[in-house]
Length: 527
Image (cartoon, rainbow, N blue to C red; front, side):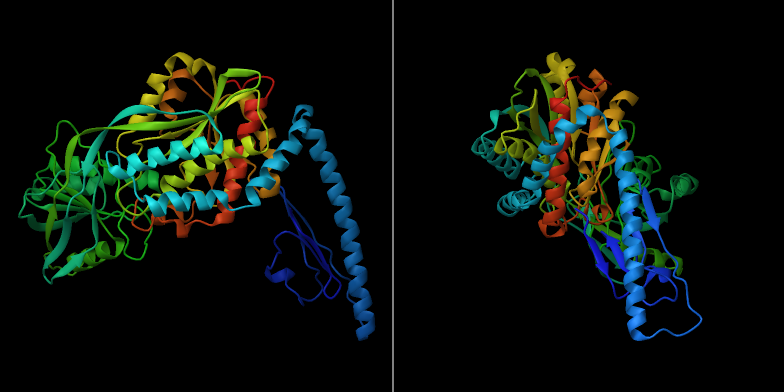
């Protein structure tokens, strides 16, 4: 809830965050503080500023205080008028069916944000189990733990669904500059990479800054280590050098690839992630290096010096392993055979603790069911939480869910995935029909109090996509302020201390409200 404050000293009236711009700071001649009301994350805002009339004579201290009080009263009256008008406008736009959900939404938000339970549960996962790469004992333990905890929460039909997953092992690895001077680099092999020979690969490094540079270098790359030094712009634009770069370089005769970490500078933190070998290209080892090491290599090359690197990697695949998706439900009171499915992926890369990617997403979606159960809010349709396995290096969990539930996909009303972190929630991305979008927008107004009411394009997720695309299911994705996300994404720094318990609680509240209302609507969403 926004806080309304009044200061007679300088005529200050604010709701929420104060405007501290130059023309509204205390003491600026002739101006009162601005009143600012932000309705939602689309930045719909209303500003009221009242210019004081300046007298040609100097007022006494007593007169100045009186003038300030009169100014404040004038502002207060103006604000009351604006708020009344705005409230009437909002009421006129709200569909009548939404009114019945105001109290349940308020209860869910209050319960979620009144405690740090979600953060503490995530701390147990990340502290006691840690990172959870597919095929590892850590992921097996996490699956067992999640199923046991769901049963303790009182969820229904808790079970695991088997999935065969790849088992890639990193092994020991290192990258060192051996000339012109010796420097150890901080690196992480890319997920799915092959190994170097036991003695390593030592070769000259050739830096390129785009695929056009790579192609222009042509045959000169034979026997060299190609270094993709492409500064991070956005994940979508930059990740292609990590995923596709090794095969494109190997076609030109390169013996290994180094990639500038796909993320902003992060205090010498390397970023791993999956590569995708092309079937028609030799497989060569590939690793990411930190932005600081990337800059060192580039500076040395720019000075005209030859840079030689020795790369050692023991990476390899072992036999596929048995894993599982974890499923829990809150059965619908009227339409138990229609489903709203929400979740995140329980696996992570083998560095850090998998807190942001995606332990937090698992917990805040799971939390929606726990909150409904605790508050005795049972919607018309069944709400199902799924903690998918193997999103990071195979998406086998999402594909297996589609295959195992194909006969009931037509009864899936909505799917929601949280895999963008659990930082300050903004709202939801949505994919579906315009009519369904209007309903989602109406529901999102229930989240204005926590500023999570934006409805944006793009509601798909890596784990929900197989089902969503086959059965044309409306889909959502939790949208958050991801300014910090890619600094720690796929790095050793992905630990719970980067997550604010209050922001995470608000994420859980947003997911719970959206899920409950969609599951309880008289009519299902349409694609």
